[in-house]
Length: 277
Image 1 (cartoon, rainbow, N blue to C red):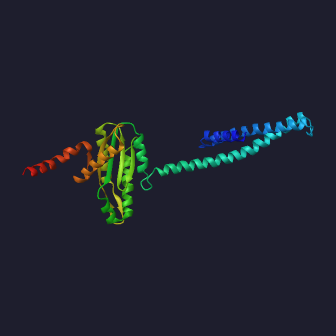
Image 2: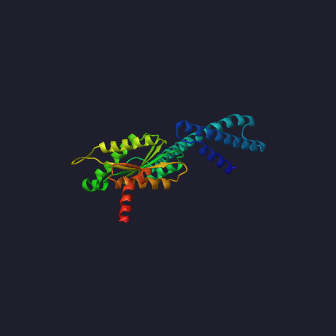
Image 3: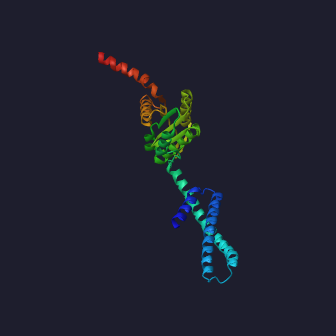
């Protein structure tokens, strides 16, 4: 019986989410009804045993009426108080756990999704789109010249601009260091290019205050196609390769993975000509 009662209580706790006072009230009501039913059954059982043994100090009818009512009132009052305290405690724990889980998915400096959370999003995303890898140009030089506090301010400013440009329909993350990743949901390449260029121009136009004036930075970007059939490792490798080309060909630009051969063609022709000579 004790194990069944424990299972019933566990079922009540698992069933209620404890996110609102109404849900706590539902939990309290269910527990009170369970406790009253159990207490009444136990009281009636003992009253019947005592009556059969002639040990009941008052008539059995009185025991059923007054004693049963008293038992139900006491059981309901005590159980309601205890159940409310337990429900409130579980409610606070649920809120704390939810907040902890939320914070564990965010980068503390930028407030964007961190790499682990973004990877989870990518694994769950089953639509066509574009994966964009942004990198702040000459970020180390900014840190060396102005200090890490200004470097942090740059990261925050870039994060704010990316969040502003890429609406909630898309996913933005700080991938690590001065790298940012964006998942653009939608298979229109033209729209993707417009968003990426808008993001780069917004960041370039942003002025970050320092103790000696203002600084500004630019972004390079590598873009890769995202399809449900393509692994994230392959998508990331393609975007990273495109980003490398954007850096190699002057920075402050975006390169799509399809442009790699076109960009490398002149150097390949030069190399081929050199071999022929």
